[in-house]
Length: 484
Image (cartoon, rainbow, N blue to C red; front, side, top):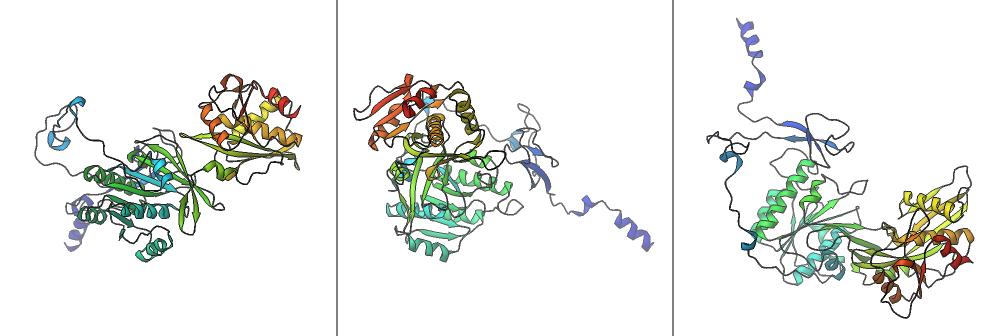
């Protein structure tokens, strides 16, 4: 009998021994689109991304007690689906346009579109050690000095470490309130009690909520913490800054939905060997996108650079071959940058194609066009292209400058030091027009340039008399003018 009792006990189903506690389950969620799968697979069927599924532990929903079982529009009862909301007409919606807060850091305010919008949520991402915490601590100091109460919640550093950084800054951050905490509920409760106008969370990968299982930084924790911070910002009117780490690919760590949740996404970029940093807006609901602000890293912190063109053009030599200048348009700001090219005899069977700050596929296209349309063969030459200053040449308006720099290196003849090249090169060797050429020419005039090579059909009408506009139709015509 004793043995049979033990046998009967061992046969009790496991579900009857959980004492009514809800069981957690594991799903695999795509970090790009958020689709859920019951098991891991290499490719997401929804968005097509590879190796984007990560494991996430979730708790099942608690069944609602009572309520009608009547379905409305395929949903469950009103008790489970929510209540009927008021739907006013858009013409009846009233409100006031809140004035933006100025931080006094001109480049930072410029990237945001004129200042900080109250009640917004801003995500700042960048490489480790690039200066994200330093920048936001300076912003907190400036806002506190302007009378806007600021709470700095640090989850990565202790209070002493933050104080040591604050003591090195030129801006006094002694009045900024500091909270060393990683629990989201504690951060929100402290912020609600203190009532600051600005809340800075450093960083979102270190914050966790006790309502979810899993370590801080996983997909579920990052998404849920960001959603609650966004809800808190909209309900309380507090501006929330969130620091985010980046992955090896350069994107912000965590789910892609993190960037969709926030109002503004700022990327802090820069080479570790250079003393300047670039703050770029890749998303902004309250201003233009792709604006940049340039800062210089000093012992007193980050100092804004009012004229980025002067910074990128300061070390240029006028007598070296393979150097050309072009005018980029970063958002609404034209910036002059130098492009260097070097074509040397290949030491191995397969020539190298190395591009820094320039798309490698675009470089291959331009080399093919120069070979086919201009008679410049690079089959036995190593080609190196570099955009000076750590800038990235994304728009096609720099094609003409890259082509001119490559030809200058092949012929070993320097280009005019007071000339810039603005235009897109087509597959037929034609030079195409670019947008807002008048603003690019105006920036070149301010920097002392005397000649501008542009597409013949896109010559600006209203320019200064101090600059000569030279229209070219093809790259062959450009090379004849430069190296005839």
